[in-house]
Length: 241
Image (cartoon, rainbow, N blue to C red; front, side):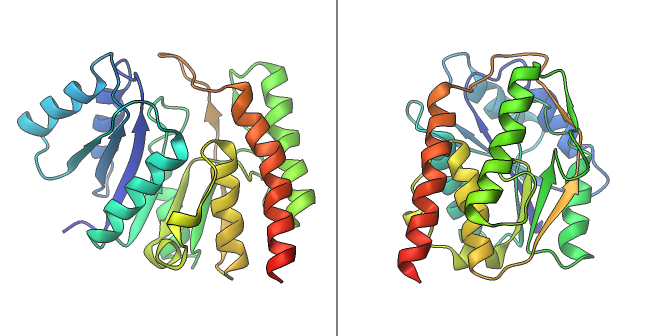
């Protein structure tokens, strides 16, 4: 059995889903893929099922959920699925090619050769490596990570990054049922929890490219959750001390 699985949450990604699946499977190292689809009305799940049936019966997996339940809950469901099946390296990646599939190899190398427990595909560790984002969104994302770093005192430049590789031991050590946030704050909470548990976090510089096809799922509520969620995380950690 393969020891690596890439978890890709989807909602209305029919323009991208087949292409991203083929791109991951074309890499020089073998990866399994788990799609977590939140009942996409555009038929994203049907495309995945067709590829499972005709070409990738053993590598491609699908969990279908009813309605939009949030990014964080999708990843939690994927983490539990992967842990039950004893994968050693568990990746998060977007479906829209904002994350370059080739960088999966670099995240994997950071964990296997550089002893990282959590490898983070970072947009900001070597400057601002973002392509085709409006300047307002770049500034909001960049300064959000600065804000998180200041409040949580965690030396990570891209705290909201959603392109990561976990060693299995990290996810086994986190009480996944206690993770409370769903959007950007979910990514922050997972990194901060791993950091407080003493795991080694390493940033790997990537170039983030804004989606060309499909519609962004970003909303003001996601940023609001992250802004106030960081304060909650810091206060919780102080009280736990």
